Image 1: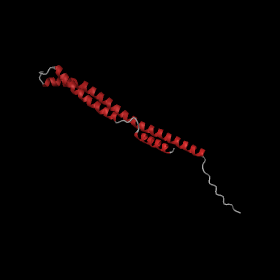
Image 2: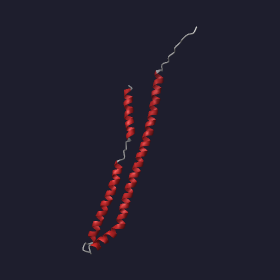
Image 3: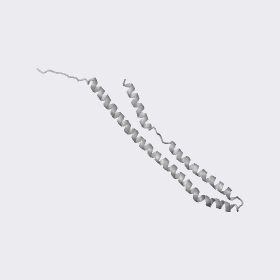
Image 4: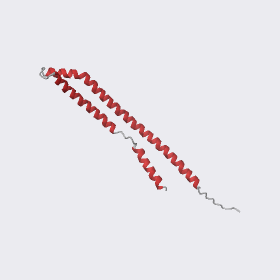
Length: 136
């Protein structure tokens, strides 16, 4: 006599909750890993922008120091001493200030491109919250 016994085992509520908690823990770990990687990428952009700004400021300063005296006296010589030396210093100083300002603007533009909240992580976190809300 063969008995045909079909035993369907339905998962218990405790095992379902344990599974959901395990999935949530893995999800949080993955989100933290993703956020860490995105922040590292943004940090690299920040380092590049800061280096650009520092180098731009340094180059502007060094160029100003080395060329300012040459340009002032050259301008004075071109005008056959009709333009006073103080006016030549003012003209050259103004041009150097504009050049330095342009370099600083370029660096500030690069800094504005940096996103402190990683966009991919923010999007996946929104999706996760929506999914969790739909599970209720």
